Length: 202
Length: 291
Image (cartoon, rainbow over all chains, first blue to last red; front, side):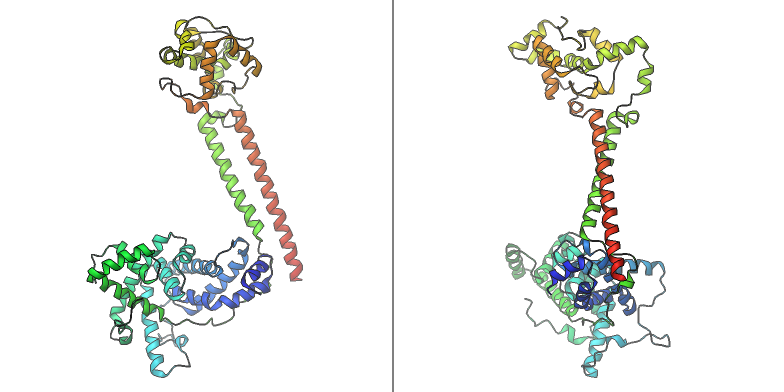
């Protein structure tokens, strides 16, 4: 069944139809939550909560991009979670081992198909990027994640974050600039990343 | 990194990378990029950052997030119609509040419930004055219009209206039951002593307690000079020396406000009932499926 038909069925209360949409979008939703929250458990909880909220309010979906609509739900859920976390700032930013020590290369970053060197490089890269994303204000972070990580276009992001197109454009530019400044600190750690000068821009 | 770069240029460079600029903007920006090395340097930096961000690996969900009915318990998800009715309900409620506030601002707190009379005004008059008020009330607006309009008409009116200037103090012949023929200063003072909100803010012909419409027509036919002023008042003509508050002339009467408010209230109640019915049907179906 195609997506609009599944959405229509879900709007009539068909949970099975909605679950097929969940399976289709759960990686994207989880990934967005993970990049915004920087914590796997919190991201999983936020993704689950977002899907529950989405099913409850799917009657209010008026067409357009369903992915953008779902991402709006998960982004709002993440904002709520971040607000709660800021009120109770007890969560460490780095994942921890069973003994309570911070993991240099978190287990959840591992990909068995990569060589140890590639894995290390990728882990470091991901760690560095996530660290730089975490330095951004929440709304800037969401914009850069939605455009550069999830590949949404500006108009979709504008609907997700409920801000005008011009605001999205300027926030994205400033967020990229901030990330770029932050990544300068990892230049030696991540030499391959900055060997891009020769690549064509467009 | 050039810190002098304006945020607008920065936004354009970033949008240029994402292909979000119009063709005209692209042409302009590319022309600038040819001549401005600093702009090119920033574009290169943004490009690198974008490439780095796009290398961020996509993570798979650690588990399935599929939902079960037990997660919702008895809280069934509502259909689109429910949200449509809810949105309408909110909008209509806001309109009702707006209408009520406008009503209060127009007629004052004493007249928030249209049709009620300010006690202070009534207390100022003895029985005779009240009786006089009953007669003169519908004519107050006519008087005000006459008072303000007459001098201007004397100067500006076309030949037919010249008679206005010639016979300002002559009592007009008015139809029966119509605010009887009190003219000039005497009329003005009588009216000033008995101002009523209806008369002060209602166009001629709309004030409550007004005689029947045919009589109005009759009076208009009898007195050409009155006819001219009445017509001006009815049409809300503003050119009369700026003294006529024509904005008030367009405000509907208290009874209209009352009808509007009651109508909106009934509509809100119907919408609430519709929401309740939809909700009950959906919950019933949901519970049936859970069993």
